Length: 441
Ligand SMILES: Nc1ncnc2c1ncn2[C@@H]1O[C@H](COP(=O)(O)OP(=O)(O)OP(=O)(O)O)[C@@H](O)[C@H]1O
Ligand SMILES: [Mg+2]
Image (spheres, protein in one colour):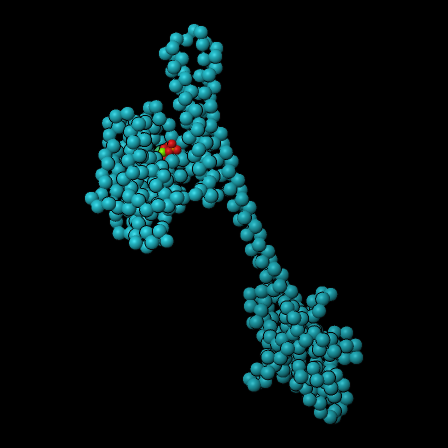
């Protein structure tokens, strides 16, 4: 009856999942108060080496507790104590007398620091006697065991006591099992969440890939449709077309072919950037030449476009791949002209700023809202602005430019106000004495 009360006072086993130490302390206390023992020790199994260690003590002095806590009870020792000859009624608890032959095995006696003393009476408790109740764990080895010592009545455990101890041990074993299941389910939940995240990530990548493929197909189809249409009409109506119409058709085919060619080049370029196989030929040079080439190329494709060039007062040399610098500046100037109304100038200036060289490309075009600036450098990041008549945009230039600038150790950023224009800022590492030595060495 008292054991039942003690069991009720333990509270639900679910508490063990949150505070196993607290739960075991309550078991030890219940074992002492309800079953009238002076000492209770709870050992738990360490699955990593199959041994048992004290986890909770009650009624043990500070000095002794330290010794008990440090002791390891190998599974072998538990096996030697829980034999049939030590088994009590109901086949659950084990009673090992202080004068039992098993204590003569040093490994066993060392684990419990037992010393035999003469027995007064068959029923009396001897100093050195051990009352041990395993904590059952299915078919496997016990998950731990209780040791009860110093009975207040000085007698061997009665059937009643044994029943009470068994009930407590069962509650304790259930709590351990519940705690284990709980932590396993937390682990499983964690694993499930990780797996779920990984699947989501793959799904996003897959979506991105599909988007990319469908955008590419769309972009390829536009010039191809132009080429096919004009070629078909040349074939079908050749005789009825005058020279001017034929020339116009061939010019359109040439324009679409050029667009197709650029698109394929850009895609190949992107795949090399993304796979990290794009070679960079870094040299130390001033920026005058690559910028002049970029200005020339843009001036060629925008007849009459005003491009202001502001070189620095003092020569500014960079450590960079000059072809790539030209490519980046061409795209920025091309954008500045392409998205501005005709007649608005575009400006390129550069100067040294500490250990960097800053290139600014400024236009007085439509500007880009803060919201749009976030999409600007994405692949196929085309915004609302229509390019100037006779020009097209694929939305790859800024993505490629930023990747190139970053690969050269620089940065590409934008400042823009809608209605007032945009400034694109490229920074590149300036050529220092060290980089010169590095190049020449
Ligand atoms: N200077 C600018 N002023 C206003 N909008 C711009 C400017 N530069 C870029 N944009 C917007 O950003 C988008 C992305 O520019 P990006 O250079 O990447 O592509 P694109 O010029 O359209 O095509 P591509 O460079 O591949 O020929 C453009 O489509 C345009 O909407
Ligand atoms: Mg562009």
